[in-house]
Image (cartoon, rainbow, N blue to C red; front, side, top):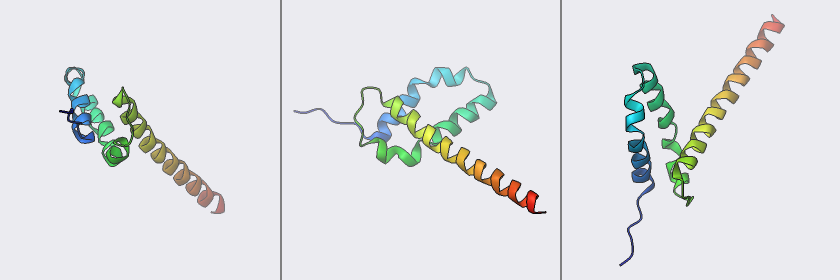
Length: 89
């Protein structure tokens, strides 16, 4: 019989579980940040499933970086628009 392949969601939860002791040692504010950071992976779980990698956490981290980069780009655009409006005034 073949081995059962874990779903991407299950694998992701297993990786988060491995960090349980680390998370417990964090301050309450850092625990919230931890949860917020790993929530960024959720929209990319389907895409993560297409990548077979010996270290799945790397794929999750890359998903986090994608979301953070999108946020940075949005903030940069907001600042540029705000500066443009200030110059026109």
